[in-house]
Amino acid sequence: MTSGVDKWFKIAVNIKYLDISTVLQIGQSFRWVYNGETNEYISSINLDHDKTFDIVKLKQDDKFMYYTSVNNNNNKQLLHTWVRSYFLLDIDRKQLFEHWKIKDPKHFSNLSHIEPLCSSCCILQQDPWETLLSFICSSNNNISRITKMCHTLTELAGDEIPNCDQLSPLYTFPNSGQIIKVLTESILRENGFGYRAKYIIETAKKIVDLKLKDGMMELSDSQYLKWKISGSPYLEAREFALAFSGVGPKVADCFLLMGMGYHDVVPVDVHVNRIAQRDYKITSGSSNNKKTQIAKLKLEYTKYPTTRRKINFDLDLIRLFFRDLWGAYSGWAQAIFFAKEVGSTSGIVDGSVSKRKLLIKTEDDNSAVTKRIKVK
DNA sequence: GCTGGACCTGG
DNA sequence: CAGGTCCAG
Image (cartoon, rainbow, N blue to C red; front, side, top):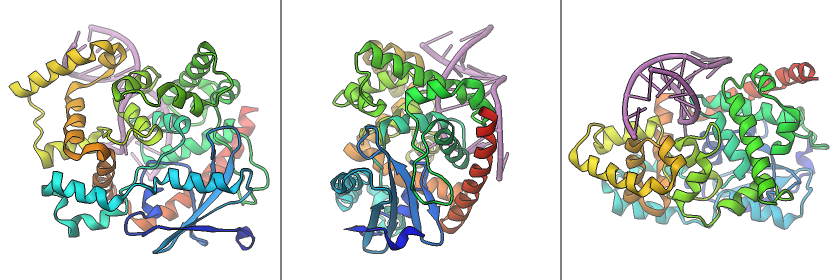
């Protein structure tokens, strides 16, 4: 196709420490589409968290990651900066492992066991607004349907991006204004969002209201979220995030970790909970020590009414346990265990994922056509 | 405050 | 059941 004229840039990345075929498909980001023939990933990216979207392509070999912008709306420098910040390439992954080996030798000293998982040790720094909505969609859901929903959202309310020269058109991820203008709860329900339809509409409305109230209407949703949250202590940031509909502790933590750069946050889901019980013997019972810890937390959280209302103290203790154990990048350590756990329980392995993704994409396109007609 | 259901949908 | 959240009692 266009690959002949694409001007690829490259950056030195050892695939042993960062393998995009894992990282882009493990369930952090949901909108990368894999092309098995060219071995490329493609998505529309809001490079500067502002208005313009670029079509970005990525591929990788043992030593390098390659990237290009197809339509090239923005300048090259912006693209270079985006790649470095999206994959957080300035973070020394080797050093993280050395740190974890010391702090948690039981699980990190046996490198031969861990080594295959190094490549998945990456928390992507994603667009805040898209991260918030994606993880609202993730509740009690599976990766393939979350993927489908994220694409549907762009098709229903985003703008088609011209000249991207793909078989199927690509769309921008819709902002809050587009969502409340174009979509309703019933439209989303008709398009398979289930009970999350309401959360999405309410969240978009709330962002619009908040921007209005703060006199920040000119900011994009992501810019606003950064303006509102960046630099706040975790507890305050979480309190703010929890105020959105459909956002509980788990979704809030995913948003803060992957969208807002709170790298020490370990989102406690069923997998992490299981790991805590099984591998670290965190008792689910109620020991005296635990009661004391919970009492302490309750006192600390009196300042945070929304947190008090939504938090599960048992699970929050697990979050704190792993934060204290793994340190400033505990969220990254969790990504390893997640890959290991999900990889073994749901049978997701390299080859089959790609094929499945392509199939899903095709279904998406078909349904998108019918759905768009239905909407109009 | 805490606990148990209900909740959309698809593999 | 799937990387939960909400609401009632």
